[in-house]
Image (tube, rainbow, N blue to C red; front, side, top):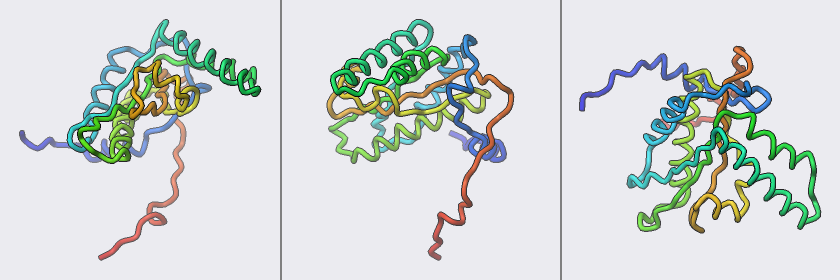
Amino acid sequence: MERPDFNIEEVNKIIRGRRSMFVAQFKENDPVSDTIIQEMLENANWAPTHKLTEPWSFTVFSGAGLQKFADFQSERYRERATKNGNFVEATYNKLKENPLKASHIIAIKMKRDLKANLPVMEEIAAVSMAVQNMYLTASAHGLAAYWGTGGPTFWPEAKEWFGLEEEDMLMGFFYVAKPATERWPLGRRKSIEEKVDWVR
């Protein structure tokens, strides 16, 4: 294969221009094309992966599926919080209503290949890089998106609902929508000079 001719200026622009945009910044009732979501997932599939384990796996909620996800997480929360005596109505409502404000919600799953005998950190890192590819693709399309680990991410019963085994991991949810405004968020980072030591 001939070496691709990358446009480094565009690469820098998309990496440094990527932003998280949250539910309050979503344009509701104006779905993103499934074709764009499919492109995001295809780009996710090209993340680096040691021993080609490709540990990423996704469940995409859209349309009526958003209501199914909202019902699952809100009702599980009600059960868990009522049992523990710490039910908060506002939290329940947020879990019930926020998914319906998104165009698509992508559950991020890490499925381990135990035969590969890789440190779990490497598999988590591979999935994280897959999500970064989705993030960059979403930003390139001018979409609002964010990766969150709220809701059922760490609930044991969510593993079963998402078809995960004990060694697997639910790594949160990637929310996608059209933005409610044309204004793009400003970015903030400390200087890289504060974070690098050179050994020459």
